[in-house]
Image 1 (cartoon, rainbow, N blue to C red):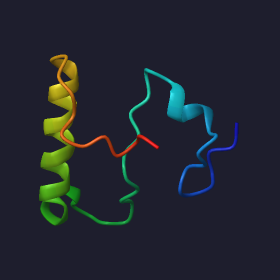
Image 2 (image 1 turned 180 degrees about the horizontal axis):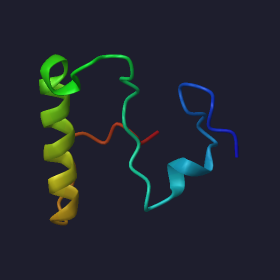
Image 3 (image 1 turned 90 degrees about the vertical axis):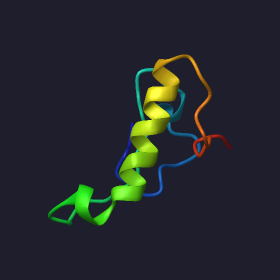
Image 4 (image 1 turned 135 degrees about the horizontal axis):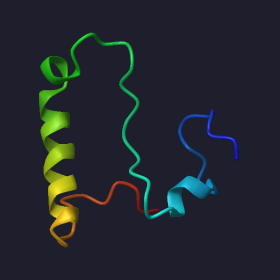
Length: 63
């Protein structure tokens, strides 16, 4: 499995694994919470919704 290309190819096996959460690539910034607070809050809220059996706010990973 090649997971080095970005964005992740549509045919990637990672997209179909139930134990994988795909997140945006935000490497290189010293404080992700400070610079990406809105994105971080969105991710945390969606993760909590899924853990509670709810639908995420946005299904960005659906094709």
